[in-house]
Image 1 (tube, protein in one colour):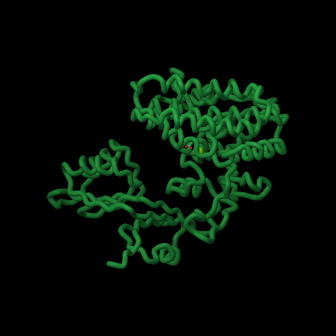
Image 2 (cartoon, protein in one colour):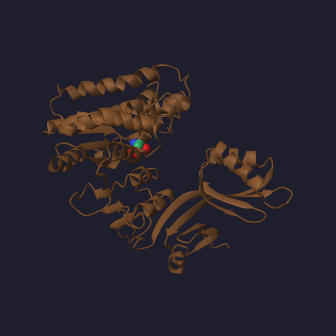
Image 3 (cartoon, helix red, strand yellow):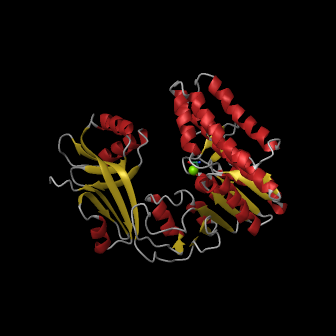
Length: 424
Ligand code: ASP
Ligand code: MG
């Protein structure tokens, strides 16, 4: 039993869907679950639609039309016969959103978000499954919401593992004995059958949940890069592919923001010792990265960059020391404002934290903190995390930078910095 995951970039157009079919046809006829994300950047577009609807903008229908025509263009390319049943199927899927958009947005915003945004995965998987069937695959489209059971934390739903595993073992495993199944990443459902989502980029995590509950022999994530690299080519000219990676390093890299794998993906498959293969859908037969329980150290230092960081420093108003009571107070405010901490450093009289800058959240957080603390902040910063650092790697990334914060543990160094402006 294997699980494949294809992300949005792999199915961004008709050519992508054809390529996916080619990869599958060459490999398996049964015992394979294919988890697919929304096509291309459709999830962003659906977020735009959701915001327009919630804000009562007058371009709601226009944005929705763009979403529809994006998919229908792909359909026309893949299915020249416009009597093919897939057309009706997709029309009907969109009708559900039409109904929702006709009503005033009275429900909770996060609930609405999940109902709207999940449609991206529903239609992408329907299109891919229909095309696989057309290409001669014995394939069944499966609604992930019948299997991934969650609580009702909309937009970031938590999985009910027990129920999910039971359902998958009982009703999905038998399907896969004689056929291939296609299902959605990113989505699940509550005990009342409302659609939930698992957080942006959550399809990798879905693949891991399915793999764990199926006791799969492996998970393969098909990407547009040749494997896990030691840095994002966006930031570094010279990058290296890492052929073998331990679960431990993979978790660390993902946690610090390497976008290659969603951070929640590794743990469930590590627990069952299921290997995770990262492969290129552009060169499907090439070696990629194998993530396993083997105890390999990374062969080279790895770099993870994050831009648009905010750094705040928090001081007790009376210049007393920062003590445990302050910290617990401060953390609960971060939790309240849903600000996720990227780096932190405690000193005698201050506590400094960096996180992704979101102006609204930053100001709300500062307003709350300011009731009891003096707060200073900087924005427009970069955060670089180096796994297996040494002085040379630190020097390399900090050329022409001012360092505002540096935190080191045995294997990992994090630096919050900004460009030298020349004035200083
Ligand atoms: N389509 C969702 C997103 O873009 C889930 C995923 O791609 O993993 O966030
Ligand atoms: Mg995506």
